[in-house]
Image 1: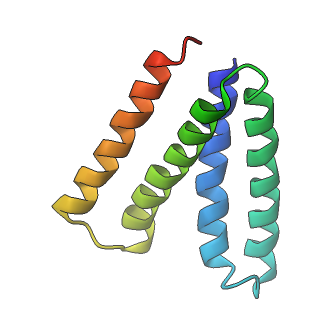
Image 2: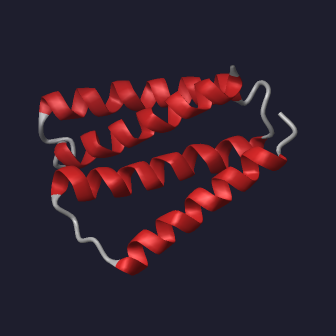
Length: 106
């Protein structure tokens, strides 16, 4: 269950990062509220997952999901640049996340 909570927390991290971009420095009310709500949800679920998972593993997976998710979101929905180097770097992050999951003992 802790891995599911962590995964959802990571998805919420992607959501609040996208909201933060859309809030234009917290100058737009709707995206700003969305950002704060999804950030709070992400932190709460991360904290719940950390009850069972090691700190280093949980935090690295949470930030990794957020980083790769924001990378994909930026490309798909915001027209950000795609390059072989950027994709290779995201793949390396994913490989690290899989390695942490496989060696965490949980």
